[in-house]
Image 1: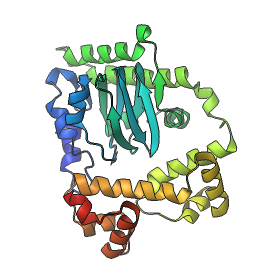
Image 2: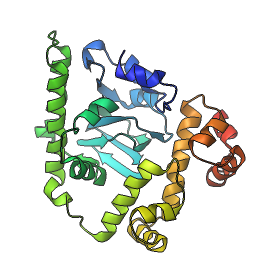
Image 3: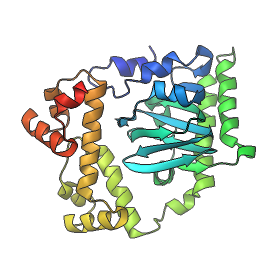
Length: 304
């Protein structure tokens, strides 16, 4: 059974990507490598509209989007990005992704990697933290249209996928993909420089958002995150406000609400089950929290 199929059938795991079926439907067999990589060619404006809506959802896979023409607006972990082609965007497991809009002349390619595949890339790598930090710090990179190394990378993966030989397909893809990640970080940031944060504020902000990615389903108090970082809640709040012009509490609420919206739209879980998943003491408390932030009750949001 494929990795993607296992993820969909696992009742204990929330399936956020309701649109994954659509991705698989538009991906020919010769654009897949094993069960772990889907290669989507020629994404244009109308096709993008059919594939994705404009709601935030949590990524349970890794995506590399190569923009060849046009522009797009989106949010990653609630941060706004405007992308002008030619460019490449990397979105990692567990990030919250929200398409906002795109130009009518949009044209792009997408590489979709399963969680198990992307996790396996770094299982023996001591560079995982600086490499991941490099991508999280700035997931968008402008590229030279005449020397589109990421377009060449996509073509190499296509060649592997189309090959009738099955030997070493996934191993070849794994090494090629790891080279892409390191090449991205080298071209964009220089991984060696990532090990020392540009500023203490940036270091605290990055640490806070990484903790938030891991714990927002269970923890909504600023004190919890401050304690993990060995600083006071007041200091954490001030740094986040100064660095991002947004409060720490606002970040926490946005993560929790994005998670709730994903579950309301993309699962058949009851509102009580969603409340339990997000560690609210009761469905009533969850409902009031959701309505205070969004202006709608969970039931109203799901119906709309």
